[in-house]
Amino acid sequence: MTDDANVIYSYTDRQAVEDGVLVPVDGEGQVNRVTRAVFDHFTESMGSSALTGPVIDITPLKEVIREILRASPDEDGWRKLTWQGKELWLVPNEVRGLTLMFPDDY
Image 1 (cartoon, one colour):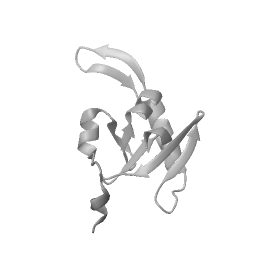
Image 2 (image 1 turned 30 degrees about the horizontal axis):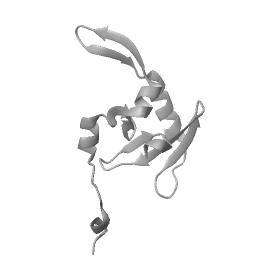
Image 3 (image 1 turned 90 degrees about the vertical axis):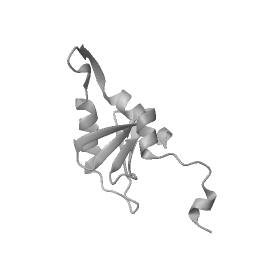
């Protein structure tokens, strides 16, 4: 019997991105995903442009990503940080990177 015999439901990274549960990010070390809750909390709408559509300030999100990357990972590769009163986890993901999330997102 394999570990998969106990899987009740499987949800892939692609499905999570398509559903909006995960948001792809790039340019911040190995962090390539953040949960929608983290994205919404640490970004701010700046309106929209006819050329680009919605314009979002991701500066605060990049700042928290840089800070949590400074934390030492535990033996499983997890990092934890409290930032602006919010507990955050940075965990390895299935697409060769790291996902930033709130504990409630897990």
